[in-house]
Image 1: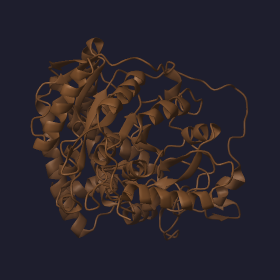
Image 2: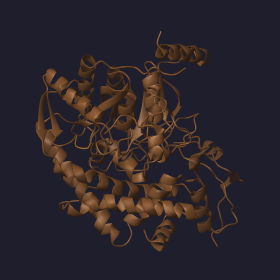
Image 3: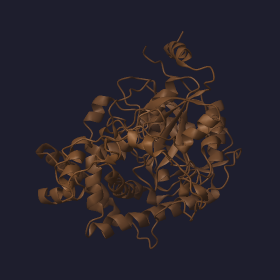
Image 4: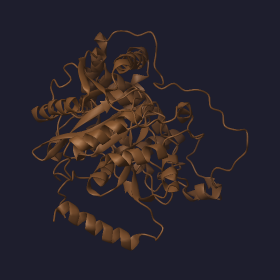
Length: 430
Length: 90
């Protein structure tokens, strides 16, 4: 009997004891999605103790079809990370517990990889679903920005944030995405969406030229082999030029830190989350003291960078320039997607790194690991990470990006891929 | 990064850094600017993309509704006689 099966049997014994008779199939949500009865801290000490009095729309819609929310999952503080090492707890990769689950929705990917038939909702504003899905060997679907209402999502990057689905079976994407998507009066961005159409078959894929330059040998081999599998599925694979991709990472960083700096202003130790500090201090000193004490390192760094990017001459040189580059990137993606169903890249440049290697990485080193996962989310495009190979027992991922609102082709691709690719489940330590 | 500039930016972000943080952040910010300087040779674009999927006005019906119970919301907060307490303004 495999360890994977043992842990699921133990989990079933526990959940059957705790469950009520009318509980349906389970799901979990990351710590930045509001759910009644659970703390929603977004992985931050600033929000410790915050218990929302409402369900996020995605949560209430899943509950309405009979699913039971069993818990919250760990994440990087406000989603600021690619390895889930900046939150209060660090989930370990179920394929090798010395390695990261990816991030920022690392806990969600871990739960979906380990527990049978589990659906995990995670969030992404820059690869936070693709990264953990790739590192944990599961499917990770990031919908078009606005496809899933963000009501109840603690969103630090407003123009890119999305709630998505992580699962070990493609059938769960087909089951859950239609439930959680749709217009919602509480999120104006969701109201522009067309109806979700499923069933479109994947016929053509574009691969940006030189996309595997600098990628680990093991991931490159897995990716190249996967292109052969796609060809075997009668998908027309063509290499294309996408020169603007090289600007995606810096432009995304600039826009995300500026939006972050604005959104994190909410957290000042008064109305939401932790309330702690000397109220006799002057207004400004109280806020400075609270934020300095309770924000983590990356939240402080991004808040400072956000202030820098919008001040004085930087506003034109960096902020406005990045908005222009996002337009260029969007046009490049649209050009390619006019003639191809999807754009295919590796999900991450390596398999999941060891925690000891992550400790030695600078903030920039960590950030650039998201160079494939960032561009689609930056342009609001839907993307899907599928497991595409194993190196030393660790999964590698392939990312498919489709046009706005065309999640249907991604779900069909996941279903076809699952038939062709032998997926492995982790041998979890018990 | 210059210490004074870092201090000013941190002040604008309402964050006070320790000496140790100041050293680490200064190194990190230098590396971040190296990354951002890749934009220097990017082609220019006249249009700015604030929202990649486009947004249209979506007005809610002009009907009063009670979304959340105020009592429930206040239970989440430390209050004094039903008011949220804050620091001195003057």
